[in-house]
Image (cartoon, rainbow, N blue to C red; front, side, top):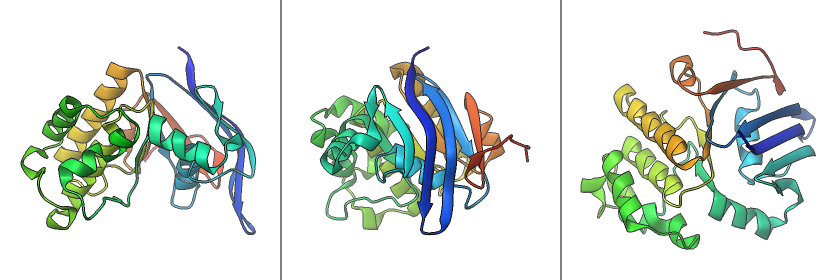
Length: 221
């Protein structure tokens, strides 16, 4: 199985605080990985670095042969647009666009808009009856599902999700994870998901546990 994402010796500090200290691991095509650890362990920082939203101090991040840390701002923006699906705790929906327009937004930028895929995602995420509404008319859980649909609409090679089910009830959260895992299996994409839920983490192929910015054995719980 070929490696999609390879992380080597990653370090990141904010002022005197060392957030990541020499993190290394790989993620093959078609696999899902749960990123776990206590608050402040560096999980979200790692996700931001892999998502080309920030640059590491040292180390390398190679995504499908592209060294992210060597890209300039325009290169990182193009990589995010074309090859990465980001689902973060902030929904970042565009208030002036409808649900339908928000879902298709990134896919249109990447010139990969597929109305049939949009419709499939809306149906699977329970959004079909909400397509003409605006974000302010939605609940937090509904906005989260729109953000997930938008992140998947352009068929990214790597899906990065930071607590994607955090605003959802358990049944809806399970349905969202079902969809993410099915799309990974169908397309050969890879999924890296931050979660505090041992139950959800157990459903993914692998687990990487962070403690104080370093890889650590997972103790369960």
